[in-house]
Length: 284
Image 1 (tube, rainbow, N blue to C red):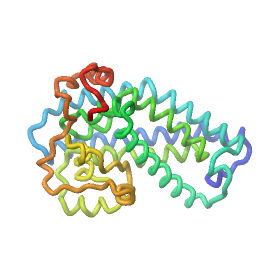
Image 2: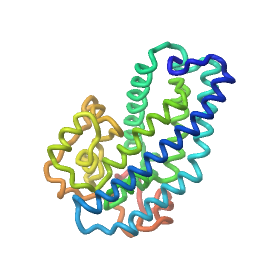
Image 3: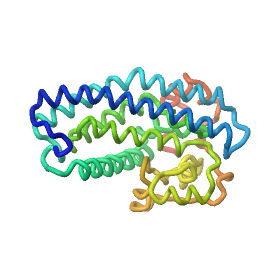
């Protein structure tokens, strides 16, 4: 693993645990700072006017806090164990090849972001996965807090799938945290209800996912919803021909057809939504 210079497993394990704690603290600080900044910008310069912020945001933040308390510690530990096991047994791509550190981290970012694109697309195409992912899409007023609105079931399934990717690629924990440190502010950004100048959005989306791209993804119209799957980089949608632009963003109705706002307008209703008999994910 070119990213790691130490070949002794004990040294690697000790160093990884220490660096994991330090990098995780940095990641959390950057995420919280970005959340505050984008909420402030939304308040001062909103694109969609007249939205109810407090109750809406508290519901979404509640889901985020639940996932952070219940699942984040479990998968942090599981990821560390899988990464260590892969390193010890030389499993995975990056445990078998040697690359310069900068090249390796760049390739890791690209491959992991490609996986995020593929996983997101699977969540739209596989009815069982969509049953949980629809909680995210059922938000009728997408903003920065919507980046936290993921059902605990989806986070669990995503975490399990990610462990397989960590094993197959032979990823170091530091690499994953560095990717997430970049991912989280960008996800907050492209969910944000900010009045970003159209020209600025067009320039940024050459490389990164932007609000005007992601708002299309949150459309109620299926042909629009099933586009723009990118997490960090927008070029995956160009490569796989799933990119969609829309001129008049005010025309976009956000949410999921067949789900009324009252069915997901509380914390507990969002948790129950995937198990509701009133919505068939196969009919989306």
